[in-house]
Image (cartoon, rainbow, N blue to C red; front, side, top):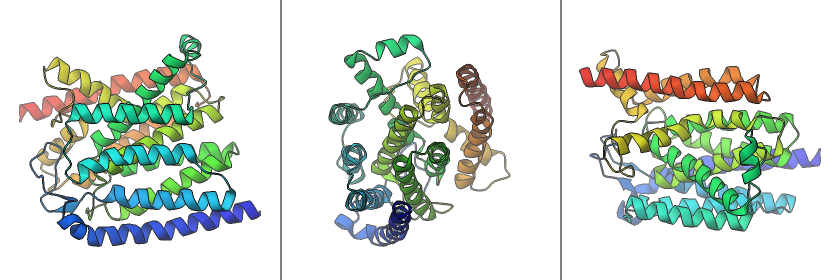
Amino acid sequence: MMNESAQLSLLSVISLLSFFVALLISKYSNKIGNGIILDHDFEKPQAFHKELIPRSGGLACIISLSTFFILYNLLFKQFLFDYFILSILIFSIGFLEDVKFKISPKYRLVLMIISLLIFINLSSITIQSIDLKFLNTWMDNNLFSTAFTLLCLLFIINGANLIDGFNGLLTIHLLLINFILFFINLNNGHETLTTIITAQIVILVTFLLFNFPRAKMFLGDSGSYLLGSLVALNIINTNNLNPQISSFFFCILLFYLFFEVFFSFFRKLYLRRSPLKPDKQHLHMLLYEFLNRSGRFKDSNYLNSIVINLIYISLILPVIFFNDNGLICKYWFFSLIVIYMVFYSLLYSFTKKQ
C-alpha cells in the first residue's frame, strides 16, 4: 500500500508540474532567444497554421519527464536509465531543428542512427518473442538484433514526426497507444512499466490542453521525436514482459506510424523524389484536403485529427480481444495494409480530380 501511495503521489505531482511547466513555456516561448523557437515557416509542406506559434512542446515534455525520472529514483531507488538516456539523446536532435540550427535531413538521419546505436549498446535493449520463427533465430545474432531494433526505433520515431502536422493528431494517437499498453501492463502486474506509461499519458494530456483544438504551442521536432521514441520503447518493453501476447498485435498498434513512413519512402522513390524531403501527399494531408474541398468544413485542422484517430481505433479495437492469437493478428496486420492502400488511393484520386 505504501508503494501504491507513493506512486499516486508521484503521478499527482507530475500532473501539476507538467501543467505549470507547459503554461509557463507556452506564455514565455516568444522570449526564448528573441523568438528563436517560434515557427515562422508558413510555406513548408507540413505547415497548416497562419500565425506565429512556438515549437516548445518538446521542451515542456523533457522538463516534466526529467523531473519524473529524478523523483522516481528518489522514491523507489531505481534509476530509469533506458528511458532517460533515450529521451535526452533523441530530444537533443530535434531541439537543434526547433531552434533553427539547420541540419540537412540526410545528416539528421545519420545523427539519429548514431544516437540510437549508442542507446541500444548502453541499454542492451533487445526485442524478444517475435511471431516469426526465422526472425527469432536471427535475433540470437547480436549484429542482426541491433540492426533490427535500430530499424524499428527509426521507423516509429520518424513516423511520429511525419504525422505531427495537425492539432492533436500525434498526441491523440500516442495517447490511444499508451492507454492500451497501460491496461495490458496493469492487468499483468508490471507496476514499474505501468507507472512509466501513466506519467507519459499525464504529460501527453497536459500538452493536448495547449494544442487542441486551437494550438498555443507545437511539439516541434524535439517533442515528436521524444514522444515517438518513448512509445517505441514502451512497445518493446511491453512485448518483452508479456510473451503471451502476439508480437504482431504490437505491430498493429504501431501500424499507422510505421506504414506511413514505409509507404512514403517507396512512394517518393517511385516518383523519383528524395524520400527524405517532405511533401503534401501523406494520408493525413490528403484527408485534410478532402474535408476542406467537401464544402462542409471551413477549417478541418483539428477535425482531421479526430477522424484519423477514430478510424485508427475502430480498426484496432476488435483485435484487442484476440491479442494472444498470432494467426489472427498476422492476418489483421496485413489486412490493415490493404485498407490503408485502398483509402489512400481513394483520397488521392479525389484530390487529383478537383
